[in-house]
Length: 169
Image (cartoon, rainbow, N blue to C red):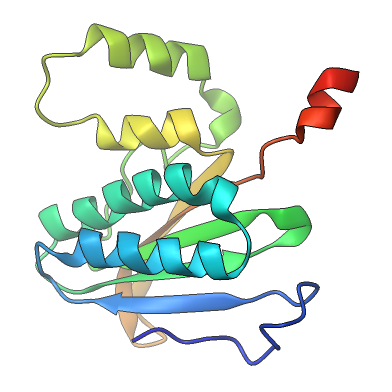
């Protein structure tokens, strides 16, 4: 069930967050995408909809494929129009690229890897994170910490630069 932070939704200066608890169900990624689209539209962040839904969908799909328990997606605004989405699941293993900071990855190398691996039927989902996200990370949650265990993976997206900035640069 979605939750809204107590700050006013009408004041764009206040940060907001939503969380969505997802059962272990093959429809969870579709529900996450629908919710994410609605939240971003409501908060005027439509320019982030495509990359956000793509990456979040991959993360929720991985949570479904690699666990037997529920997952949770949290969507929140952070400074300067940035968006952070995190997905918690019950598997404590941190997959790449979340196990290393994004500065250690080269986007052009990731694009080349994607182009070279066109026949693969799986394994490209987290490559999408490397291509689309501006920042990412993950950490294992200790057994019983706050009553939960598993891992939390997150990614951030920044708004695209405005057209006037691109022309001036």
